[in-house]
Image 1 (tube, rainbow, N blue to C red):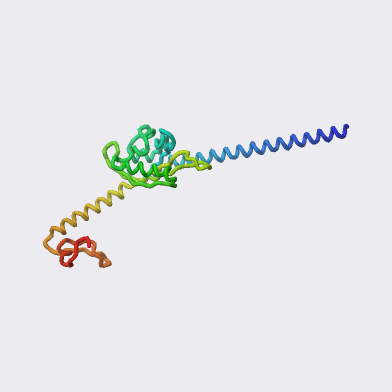
Image 2: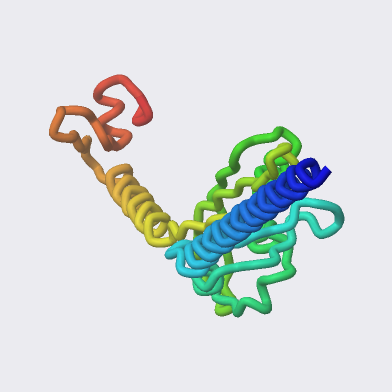
Length: 212
């Protein structure tokens, strides 16, 4: 019996040590996973806050859907509002009123059509009345089961590009007006010999309309 008892005690001790090591391994793995999650969260927070483009997180469920709950400094600078005047507002409440409808349709498609992302260019009005423009990229963050958690928005400033395009268009319109009122047939060709501008008299000589 003494021998049997000794074997039993030894076996129990080995089992206890094995169990302790298993628990210790589990604790180590849990701590490692926790540290990795914290590091990932910190990287995201740093990227979000220091991004050169406007970024925001918004709700996607219930009556609070599309409401912003976190924004970065770049978005505040672009819109011209302090953070406390942006957080809590619906995402589609931000654009110029004529662009709200297109913004709503674009973002609703993210959930209703299960799209990976939506992209729309819209105008925004700052508190001083200045109109700026930006391309809004939105996507939905989902869990492993595919259930939406929250939305991520990025707003890229396109104001200078739009202003340059508008200035070029206005310049061409003014030039076209001058050509159309000239008492002569006038046309402009590019380096490849293609017509880029013609007035009505020049088109008439060719037997065509200026659009042709």
